[in-house]
Length: 120
Image (cartoon, rainbow, N blue to C red; front, top):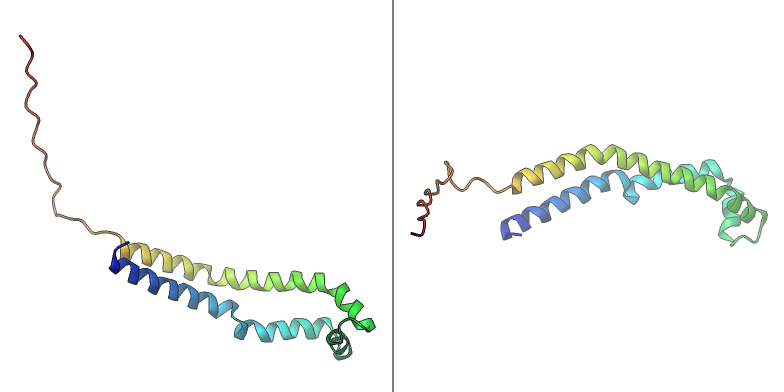
């Protein structure tokens, strides 16, 4: 990769990471995770979970974790789906910006080969 394209690639990587970060960073997901957990558990259950499953709340966490995990995965997948068009555009822009340009305006003509001589 040429030094110029390496710089473009690094800028492209930063744009991709920034685009993904707008949808799946902890800053974005934290309030939604809090809501998921708040909807799934009571305050008493959360206190029990912190106590390392020593209470009935620990059993509730085990029972509810599969559904909560599935909802978490669906949340991240929806965020990735939302950013997908932007990632595709960034990739297309990168390819366009790094595509080598024409080296000349007209195709080079190669001289015709001389006719082969036949042995006599």
